[in-house]
Image (cartoon, rainbow, N blue to C red; front, side, top):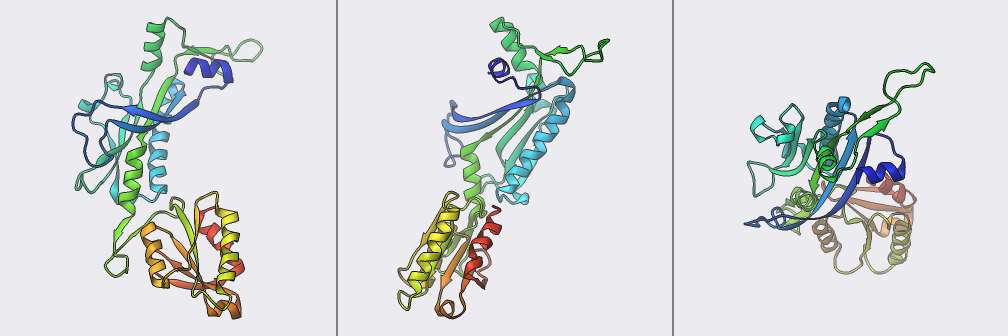
Length: 301
């Protein structure tokens, strides 16, 4: 799509094309849940740049992709960035182009690691092959480069861009997030909780009335609707008034909900609510009119 994108969108190098879609592999022995399968979701970026800038862009994308996985809550101790050994390099990378993998320590690979993403400097191999076999000129004319003309403007330069390609398995990424979040805790009623990063948690917050009387459900429902209106586009805001408060907390722990807001008898007197933190089990009181801002800060929005 390089030529079509350049001709139709008038973008300038450097630029990238990102896409997500189905990929297929002739996998002889599918195993380890979704880690190794014949059909999977692939995420990739084709980033086009000047040959002289390829190494710098390769380093940028390698480091930025590593930090992106860490931002999802994957523990740095479970992630490694591994440069390929010389005998692992693809034929197009034999002349010093970089190739590296971001790998995660899955339970079924420990103490070893399994690949999450590969980042490769593919040089101009892809465009060169396409140019040769399709008989189409794939060179890019860069008007910002070249020797200066008498009028001071650059002469321009024709070149085949190099491609930096970060390519990740979406299914493996989801599996890594689930493995990272799964946390056994025998001290809890649930026995386990899902330690999702708040931005990834499917249930962002839960609102509970302590009991179904004394006006607590009405206050809780009002807070629930306020939070749902502000944060509903990010994920689910849960409301629950059934069973004991302990069982409701346990359900939210299993679902990975990071914060529970409880309306109790003190709320009726001082307009504060109890905030329960999933990971630490700490509880604190905050003003009910500060709940939305509190949650926004935790979600980073």
